[in-house]
Amino acid sequence: MIQQNTSVGYDSKVEGEVIVTRADSVINWIRKHSVWPMPMGLACCAIELMAAGGSRFDISRFGMEVMRFSPRQADCMIVAGTVTYKMAEVIRRIYEQMAEPKWVVAMGACASTGGMYRSYATLQGVDRVVPVDVYVSGCPPRPEALLDAMMKLQDKIGRENAVKDLKATNEVLAATPGARVGA
Amino acid sequence: MKATDFTDLVQRFDFLTERESADHLAVNCPADRLLELATALRDELAYDLLLDVTAVDWDAEHPRFTGVYHLYTTERHEYLRIAANCTDDIEPTLPSLSTLYPAANWHERETYDLMGIRYEGHPDLSRILMWDDYPYHPLRKEFPLAGIETPLPADDVAAQTNAKVLPAPMMGGPFVAPTEGPMSQAEPLAKDESWTEKEENQ
Image (tube, rainbow over all chains, first blue to last red; front, top):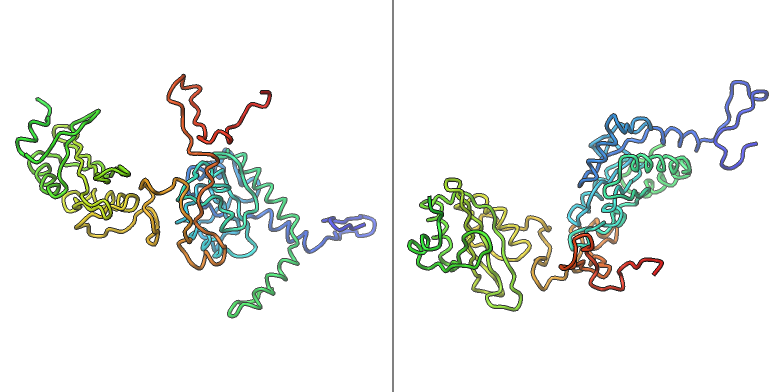
């Protein structure tokens, strides 16, 4: 019996070579196993991010090793480091340049809350300018912590209503003059 | 070889006075003679490296602002600190050394940005750290540590996100380490002690 959250239904006697599933499950399954992160390296957290991308910690085990330095080719912005007010504008613009669907990971204390920088120059958490999906604690977080956050993000992607979100996005686009409506 | 001391300098520059210093030679120079002094130091006394340009805000005192320069000679390996008081407390100005030392260019922009000292003759005295429209000079004494509410640099981003430059939560700060006792117990604590974490079994 297919319940609301069941992703796959299979009965060898009834279905033979056919697997029954939901569009949401398939779309989410595809998305979560090919996250394309964009490193937004702003401070020392970026060094740990690089370590996570290297062979020892090996982010490619989770299907997200294709780090792109262009927002047009990425769907997950990893904000790694201290965000100043001067940089906040840049982060927002780069976020807007990323194609939907897109996610944001706030890596480390500074990106999450401003960290130890209780200062006139530091944005007190990147969630004030972009919507954050996963926060990672640590100063800086170890690569394992980032990998854990990325797996949490995968879980989150797996729970999304992909079809519904797509429809909502298209409605927004349809109401926007000059925007091109997709599928 | 004898190190350069104050008597050597005052023979050549009679307008200098000696300045109290915990380390190397330091002199006070009137702001209007600074360019003359720096030119001679560079060309005659081989002070060929400008290491630092900064300033001090003395708050209520007069003169309020003092420009500070650190020079170094790669020939004799000696440091020299020059301090020049700004005559005007409201709009402090100093002559720019950027024509003598290229290093002065960005240092003076930083000091202008954070302290609000105008360097006359600077080729492009714009802010270097804060954004161009920022209305304050954050290292001045009257500027609060947490900051002052101001609009975000980009109007469209500010309109979209409702984000502003807000005073940072200080959580009872600033955090000050006690000067007495062993270093192991010198953890910086908030001045407002209601924020200090207490041990649970107490």
